[in-house]
Length: 108
Image (cartoon, rainbow, N blue to C red; front, side):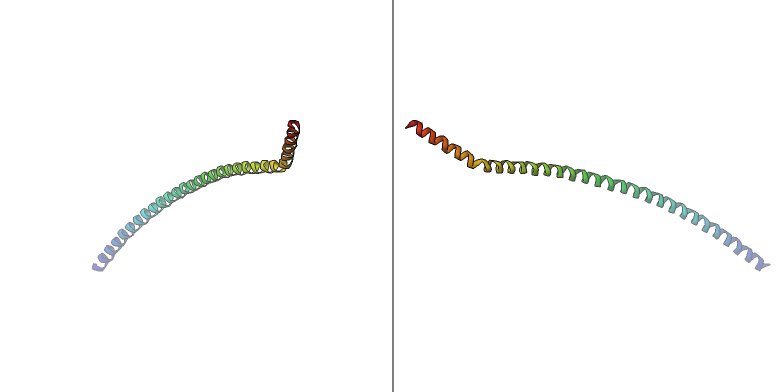
């Protein structure tokens, strides 16, 4: 009779421990679900922030490239204008000399 009581006690104790174990496992699975849900939300927000940052950087680089291209185009235009003026310089100086010769001949 004592043995039966002891076995019943151990069975009841084992059942209570098992219930506690199940409650702990359910609690852990709920916590795990919440942690994974928060991790998913965090990773999505981080991804959105990275894409936003990269689009901002791309916009600024594009704007800087347009500005630099404008400066280079202006410098190229100035260089072309100077080259054109230099190509005309022999004719300009020749005409000046002709005019100065004509002015001298008129004065004499």
